[in-house]
Length: 175
Image (tube, rainbow, N blue to C red; front, top):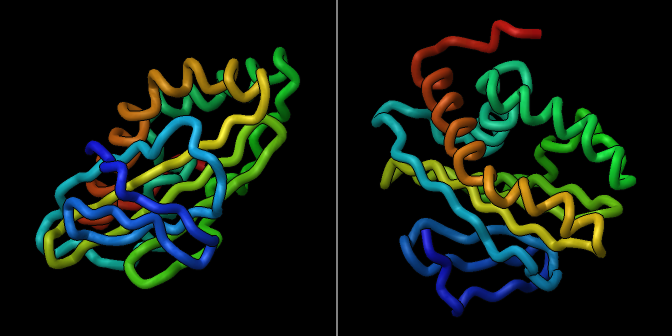
């Protein structure tokens, strides 16, 4: 999805308004956007539940991520040490806030600040995942270069897996 220039970032409790499609507003703390918003939108089956916290938890559930995504995350935990970035905490993708039909995940670290909005539009049957990253210094730029290449396929794969699990009633089997 292309994000139009009329988006505005205000405060943590305000929203980054996405004008098209008319789905909603995304919560982000104020910061210069150095990577630009990246969004994925997937169609939900008609009977899909509408709880944004549950969807965010399902998308970022480490026990149920596609194996290739888990392999990349494991590789990340090792490689980041080479540039002086600490490995990610196991709670890095925990939901920080829910506002209406959106869940916010945020994490600030030495090399970047990360914001993710997970929204559910039950009328249009859409699941939205939008991320914004503010890079900090050379570590952030070095870290995010390969991440930027894989961001979209990783996010979409995680969302598709979550949709399959949540609409089929299956739950993660891996520890």
